Length: 281
Image (cartoon, rainbow, N blue to C red; front, top):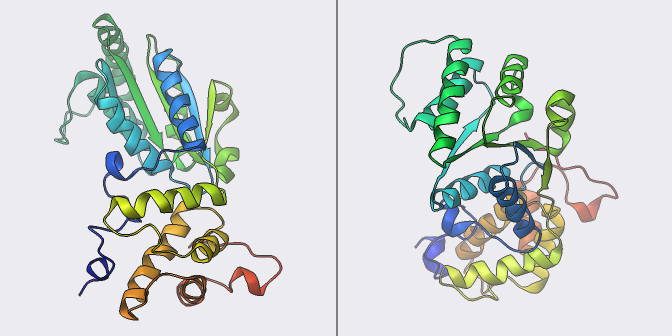
């Protein structure tokens, strides 16, 4: 018997496989959505999505990308800036503007030629009332050449919007000339305990099980050990479900969360030391 069957879950609430269905929008997350929509609706050029690792920047982008697909005349694309070339960045933007979503290889064009085509395509999109949106993940991992190309693209004509995602600690790696063009900051911060509890109360019944599957103390401990970072908390919770099912427990309590953390997480648990820094490998 799988642990999902044991807990009467249709699927895990902690594995976010479907952005439109699984993404949790509440409290401060609603503010981030509203800010992103403001940027797009008012034709602002650049926004900066910032937050610690594990707060869901990539998940937000996938959610917002799908959300844009339901809005007439919005044309959105998502690209990871880590490890790409300036030419690929320009090509992906050009493909978005031209409506070419295939991954088939095309003729090799210089960056200058692609930018010329981008200028023409931007004006054509605007002429038909379309607003292009470029969601750029891991901007703090982009090479200097890609950052330079991005700076050139941000000065292209017409109405379009780009949103860059960076880790909180990685903002210092984004050149000042890019940050100076940012018109709005979108902050995805660690959750407070109230938001964590709201997620648990909402997500558990959504996938078929009871809302008290995790005890109040278990939720609090999960929040403390995960430091309010969704990725860390969800990893603890999903592992606890599997172990709890194997032990045929009635609910997930604080003791089990502690045991899961001690066995599967790096370093000692928070309650055993005065200061603790979570290190992700």
